[in-house]
Image 1 (cartoon, rainbow, N blue to C red):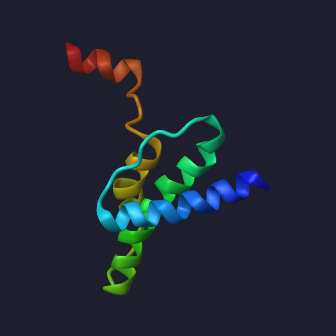
Image 2: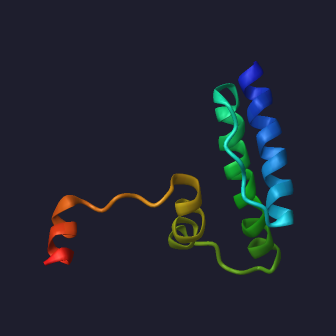
Length: 86
């Protein structure tokens, strides 16, 4: 139950952060779900703004604009690193 409260509080804080244009800090271990909520909540604001403006919302747009912030920059595989270095 504590984890659900943490997630809910994080979503609320994330929406506020998104409205203020502030990026989230890294909280302690018990608040990891809260952090996930903050990160997801920050993405709700731009998505809601697009929907309000009746702009299309596609998976590629979500992956581009939300994916990197939620999951970080994913490492490239070692083969493409070798090819790029040569």
